[in-house]
Length: 155
Image (cartoon, rainbow, N blue to C red):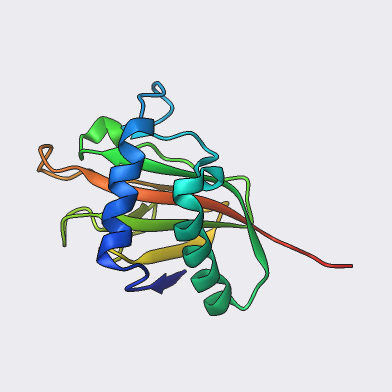
């Protein structure tokens, strides 16, 4: 697992929240909290931020990667929102847009909780099962951006 801190400016981070609000929907029991569509990286208001996050990840991993899916999550820490899942991608990236330090800033894995600061990223193999953590402050919204990334092989 790779953690990258201080990825976006504060204005870019706040814009992600502002731009995502009209697209956040309850998609049913297999989707915890509210989510945007899975192709949010194709929307013009999100393109620059996705490019910046992807470029940061590519530099750190030293791999050529492309985004296959991307969406923003809004959760409020209820246990029912702890939905264990994995992704059909080479890598999964989670960017922490808005979190509470020590409570929900990170990703829950079967073996442990990996803390990542607000405005940070965790990147891990897509096949690893994970979930958003529950936390005791349901009045505080947690925003995260998830990406499924695949390695591009040339030739």
